Length: 335
Image (cartoon, rainbow, N blue to C red):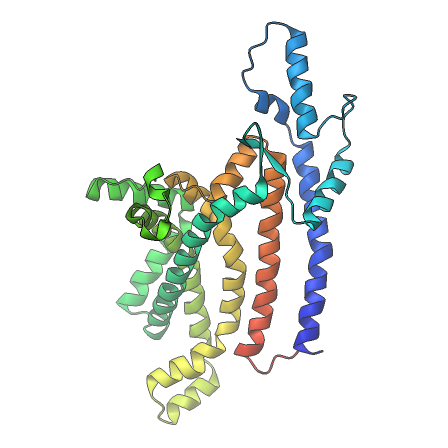
């Protein structure tokens, strides 16, 4: 099978997988405890039960949970409506975020917030990848040295830390050293962002937290893969022929160890978005992670479905791109 045929087949496979994911997410969200209508109406001032019931029914109808005859709309019927809207690239309107007396379009919320999460994740991914490669190569080529032992201990400590706790530690260290907590304020997000110095200042700590969180696992992987490759016979042969040490490591050993590394990198890209949920919450960063968390806290079903659809879709696309990358790394792979 040609590479083009493989891409077409894998792209078609994404459709039934996404249908299964959305159906499972929609079902779990709707059977989870908690009444989104009560959360939305909040502390409404009503002196009688009739007043409260009237307010409740009005909000439930607006949210699509009741029809005009006050009958409950079946969850499967609402799921069909969700899929139909999704095919038209419409995620519906938020129940929590309001604008001009009605829910904001979720597509608009995502478009407004995506720039913050994308900027944060791209920077942290690039830094993590570069540093992980350097640390992994140094550890593998100087096995059992003081550098290798020190980096191994540091990586183990970092791997055992929850990301939100690491973010809190960075915040605490920054406060004691520079009197700067890194918690963003409104001034940091005034447009245009590229000319806003406060934006870059408040970007430092969340980027550092995500970088350290992703760095540890990738560095350990690079080290273990490179150590395994360096023990292969063809590497010993290359050394015996008198090739330069750098050529042996980077031309022969490192490239042959890239396949599992590319796999982990491809799978970790959507994971960065998931990890940014906690980091954004700690530093008050108004990205998609904050939107996802607020949607879950306030039982905003349309917003929860949007985020629970986007993250799996990104994961499937990342897997597809990873498989395509294999061909360019290892010419022996055929589809």
